[in-house]
Image 1: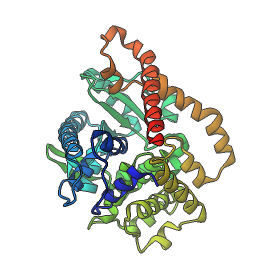
Image 2: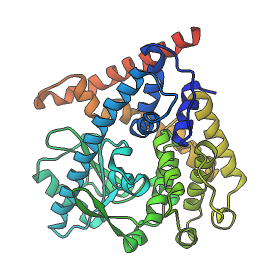
Image 3: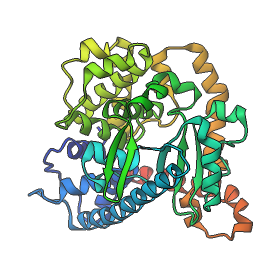
Image 4: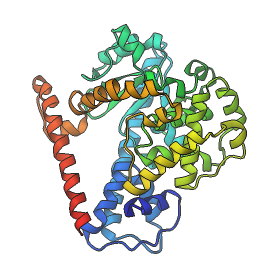
Length: 393
C-alpha cells in the first residue's frame, strides 16, 4: 500500500494516526504533496492539530499556513459567488450555487474545510447568452479553451462556459448542464432539479442551490466522470453520508427511477466512500441502489489504484465506461475524446498557475499556450524524478 495515502485515508476517516513520521522536511514533504494533490489540506490540518501523537512541527506549520490561505480564498470566493448571483438575479436570471462553497456548507458545515479554486454556478440554457454578456460587461473574459456560447453546436455538446475574473485571480464556470455529453445519462435530470431548489446561507448572504439529494447525486456523477481522481470528491460524499441530516433514500429512489445510470454512479460513490473512508452504508442500499457486479468491479479497481498508486488514472471517463459496459463508447473515447481532451489540457487551457509561472502583458497572453506545455513537462518530469529517487531509498 502507498504509505502516504495510507496515512491520508486514516485522517479522512477521522481516525487517530500513530504514524512513524520520517524526520526532516524531506520526510514529510511527500505527505504534504499528497494532501495538496487531493485538495484535502484544510481537513487534514484540523484532524492532525489536536492529536496527541502529533505530526512533525514542520508539517503542522506548513498545513497551518495552507489552511489559512485556503480559508481566506474560500471566504473571498463565496462572497464573489453571492455577488455574481445577486448581479444576475437583478436581470431576472436565476442562479444556483454548485460545488465549491455550497458543498462546503452542506457536507462540512464550514467554508474553511473544503478546498476549491473556482466558482461553479448553474443557470438555465435559455439564459446563457444574456448571463455571459452581462458578466463580460462587468469585466470577465471568456477563457480561450472554453465553449463559445454563440455557437449552438458547441452549446448543445458542452455543459459549461469558463470565464476569467477581471483580475484573473479565479474562474467562474457557468453551467447549464451538469456533465459533458457522454456523461449526461449518469446525472440526475437537471430540468426536474430546478423544481426542488433550496436556499442556503453563506456568511456573506443567501444563495439558491440544489436540494440535498440532488446535490449529493450531482457530486456522485462528477466524481465518477473524473474517475474519482481526487480524494476531496470522495470525502464530500462520505461527509454527507456521515452527517445527521444524511440522505433521504426514498427521495433518491424516486429521482432515479427513470435514470438507471445515475443510480449506478451513486452506487459507485457509496461503495468507494465505504471501502476507503469507512462511510456508513445506507440500509436502503439493496433496494434503492441495486448494486451490480459491474459496479462492484469498477469500485474495486478504483480502490486498488488509490491504495497502491496514491491516485487514479484521473479524468478519462473510464469509470463511466466501465459502468455502461459499451464497446462503441470505449472506441469513441480512445480515438476521439481522449486525444481531444489531452490536447485541450496540455495546450489550449490556461489557468492561474500558468499566469503565476510567468507574468505577461495582455497583448502577449497568447504565449501562455506555448508556455503551458513547457511548464507541464517540467512539473511531471520533476515528479517522476522524485519518485525514482524515493524508490531507490
